[in-house]
Length: 363
Image 1 (cartoon, helix red, strand yellow):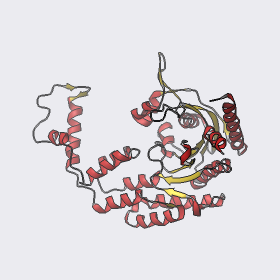
Image 2 (image 1 turned 135 degrees about the horizontal axis):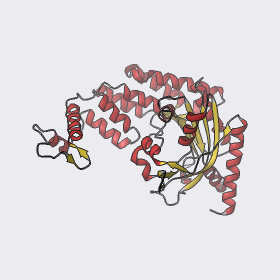
Image 3 (image 1 turned 30 degrees about the horizontal axis):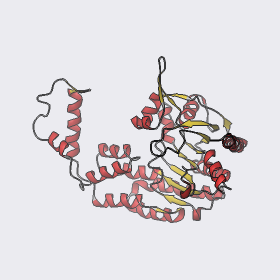
C-alpha cells in the first residue's frame, strides 16, 4: 500500500468517525492485545485460525484484536450505563488463508449502541447511519435476521441435546445440514458410533484414563450417545419448514409475508417475525426504501458468530473482489456473556475505509 493510499484510508476513517461522533457517540478505543481466553470462550478454537496469537509470561496467551466489539462490550458492561453510544477507529488483525491479496491488518470504524428502550429503532439507527455514510459509494445492502433462525431451532420438537447441537453449529452451514439430515433420519448413524453403542460395556478393558478423558467422562459421553440414538427423528414437516425458512431470499416486504406464512406452522418464530416487522417500520421512518431492501434468512451465518438478531452488510460489486464494505447486527447474548449473566440490548456495525477507497480508485 502506498503512502497516498494509507493517508486516504485514514482520512476517510476520521471523516466517518466524525459524523458518528456528531450524532452523540462517545469516542473510545481498545488495546491492541486482548486476552485470548475470553475470545476462545466466545468463539471456541475456530478463532485461532483467524487471529494472531502470542504468549505473555504474566498475562498468558494474548491475541492481536480481531475486532473492537468484544473489548468495547467488556468496557461498557464493566463501567457503562444505558443508553450509551460509542464510536472507535483503528486497526484489526486477521489471518488470511484463502486470498493472499487480502490484508492481514486493516482499519475499521465502528458504531455501537446500547439502548433497550426500542430495539427496532436502535437497529434502524445503526443501519441508517452506515447507509448514510456510504450514500455516495456503489454498494448493495443486504439484511437478515439470525434471531428468526435461532427461534426456529429452539422451537423444534426434539431433545434439548439435539437443539443445542444445532444451535452450536448454526454458523457452519455444512455441519448444520449434516446434523439435520441425521436428526431427520436421512443419514444413518456413523459406523464408528454404531460400534460404540453396541450392547455390552465398551469400557470393559479400558483403564481409568483414556487420552485426556477420564473413564467417567467417556462413560457419560456414551450414555449421551445412547440417549440420542433413541430420540425420535424430526418430523418431515419440521424439516421441510426449516428448509423453506432458510431459502427465503426476497425484498424485505415479500420476505416478511413469506415468514408470516411459515410462522403459521412454525409458531416459535412468530415473535422474531414481529420484530422484523417493527424493524422495517423503523427503517422506513429513517428514510430507508424497504420496498427494495434485500432480505435473506441465512445471511451472516458463516461470518457473524456473535450476532443473534438483525444482521446486515453492504457489499461491493462482485467483480472488484473486495470484502464487505460494512457489516453489523444485534448481539444481545454477547453482552450477557461478557456481563457475567447480566445483559443489555446492543447493536453495532463497522465500515472498512480501505474498501471504500479501493472502490473510489476504480471509478
